[in-house]
Length: 595
Image (cartoon, rainbow, N blue to C red; front, side):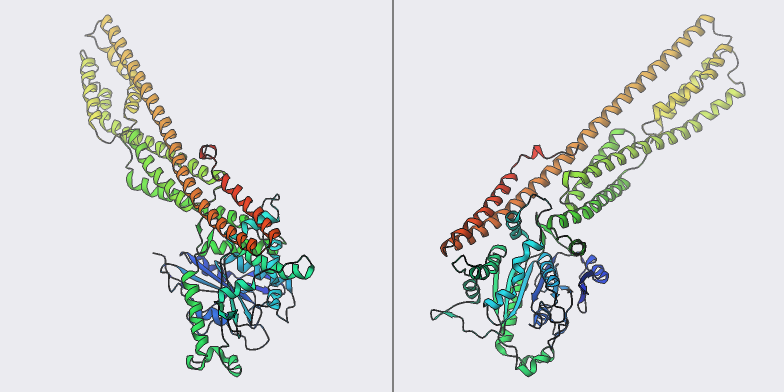
């Protein structure tokens, strides 16, 4: 089970120094140790609007993120606090507190836009914190949302246009929560009480008209409706008397407005219960190391003057993880073979069967750990490495067998060689005695266990190397006639030829076994790849169907409100999405190959 991370307080994740965004290595080290799935909640808003207080409460603390009590912003860049998720065991809650937008000391809207964009890219729930009601001033302050298509790319394809990028945004953008602080209005419309969510939807209604003023009014509302179909609103009374606000984190609960306490509790309960695990396209669950990779890729793109690209970030992450998945699979294969294989193996088929079982498990390990393996490059690399491992084991098996047989032959036949040197067989009738002793020793060699696949070949090589010795004994045996000697020479030749033919047949059989194994390996890769593609396809379709339902719902709202032009634009995005869904149904046989 993955260990929990216990941070005593927040650390800077992304520093904002003199207009440059720089990633903090200390924070990355913390993320790299978070192996659990992460739920990422980011909060953004104008400086001095009490964002940090809400984040501290989500962490279950009164102190942590610094609370500014003056017009000077305390938080710079993006700060991070990782805590065990209080409602989801086995998950880590990552809280991201951002520097206040519109800081009078900074005066840099460019930097504010990047902070806003990064908060959206990294989070699974995005909290926008503002003071007072949702009026035009509040919408004007949220102008960053209208710049998202100029700040973020969904695809790296140069052919993707604004509409296509916008169509993709919904699938990976976080849930949107608007937190309205020091809210003083009575929630009613036509004398009927309404909920904060109703108030948000009423505030997002468009104004008819094609003039500049109407466009300025509608643009931020349209963007919120289009990019964040899953949205929620919370209102908060003033937490305490104005004179006590400067020491909010030090106040006891009895010194706070009871309504505010209840509202904060409701907010925290919702966020902790409804915020999803951060995921990438294809249902890929994000953990600490994956979040670390996203941070590095996005900030690197911004620093180099490029736009953060979702597709590029996922592919960069896939490169890292798929490479690690190959090594993980190979390590599993090595472990399994190390436990099962005892060299030399008696037959090649035994070794290939063990290889096949270990290979299947290794492919399963890779499939579980990999994603977005474009053109199956990493699976091809795994296949190549597994083939080499198999060949290496076959060579090790051959050598182990050869060494074992060589030692046995030396041990069994060396006494015979000594007897030959002593002239024991250089006498009448010596040849028959020699042949009889040779047959006994061959039988003894065959009876020895654990010789492996080289036994016959090594024996025949040994006998061939001693042919001159055998022939010398034959020729010196005076009891044999010339005819008998000729017959014996022919018999030995025939026996040698028969042994050679048997070895050739065995070699061909081994080659056939190797070819069959290679075909089985290929089929195993294809089988598991096909199953993974089916699962990925089902996951992608589910995501697209969810996105489609949200867009159709928003289109219906626009039609009801009488905004046909906006509805037609939404229809274009819906059509793009439907076309993408059709592509998912391409036959797998056209795409599934690792050769």
